[in-house]
Every structure is written in structure tokens, then in C-alpha cells.
View 1 (cartoon, helix red, strand yellow):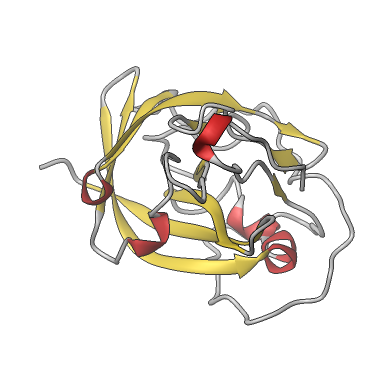
View 2 (spheres, rainbow, N blue to C red):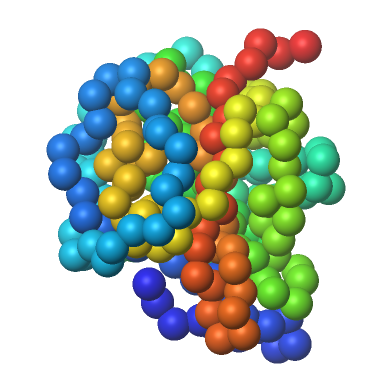
Length: 205
């Protein structure tokens, strides 16, 4: 939810994603089904409860930057916490936010969640996220090295559907993956939907 911000002539930012209507976290290894065309409104509730468990060490580390070569994006990353079930990316539209209760890039389990703004007049890091196609690469630089991902699919969800699916989308268990999230469907006053890019880690070339 959250009201749109303004950044000079840059236009309205998509500000936040409410992850509501959650049940129990998705089973280990569960994958997200295809998006439905519409969904009823969901009651607000927090993001999945996460314990401060230790993530696998290996290459896992806090992200520093996200690069999407196909979009010409190379954005710095800031930590992003959920406040009452809402993720709010950095106010700087050229930066992106990493959900710090999710997995770290390089972990062997869980979902790395990175959210960025779309600005309807241009200038947002994820303005063209929805144009990515399967096979596109995403490179996440961390404090320990680089983790590479390959896009598997791109989905668009209305906000109620995103809320209903949030326990699966933001799962902290299961096979490792990366989600890139931004707003979509500007109607002249706000954004009606969210684009979600699903990507899987790939071996370094």
C-alpha cells in the first residue's frame, strides 16, 4: 500500500508492496503456480514470520549491487525491512532494496527478494522489468563475490493476488531463487499491479 511519492519531475514512484492474506509458509520445494487473472481483496497481515536462523554460509552474503545487462541496469542495493507486512524500496528510484529477512544471494535455500521502483515518466531502476524474457541473466554482486541468476519466467499480479500468494512468493525455505519485483499498470494516479521476475542461480561462467 502506501501513497505515491514524488521526486521532482521524475513522476510518481511505486512505493511499497503489501504482502497480506498469509497462511503458513509454503512447503519446502514448493513452486509458485501461474498468476490468475483476478482475485478478491485480502485482509492485511504480516509477511511470513522468519526466525533469525543462520543461513548457509558458503558464498551467501549481503548483496551490494544488482545488474541486469538486458535492461542496462546496474543498481546499488540497500537493506529493506518489512514494516507491518509492507516492503518499501529505497526512496532513490535508481537504487533497489533487498528484503533482509529473506535469503542472502548464494544461500543454498530460500528466496532472495529484491524490489525496485518503476517511475511512470522514467528513471526507475526497474522501469522495464516486465520486458525481460526467460534466459535473461541477472548478476548480483555481494560482499563475498558474484552470484549469477537466469530468468525462468515473468508474471504480473494484481495487488490482491500478490497478497494471497505472498507466503509462497516470499518463502524462506525450498530451492534457492531470486525474485525481482516492481509495480506495473499505471492508471494515471497509481499502480494497479506488480511484475515479479523469477530467476534461478546458475553456475559461473
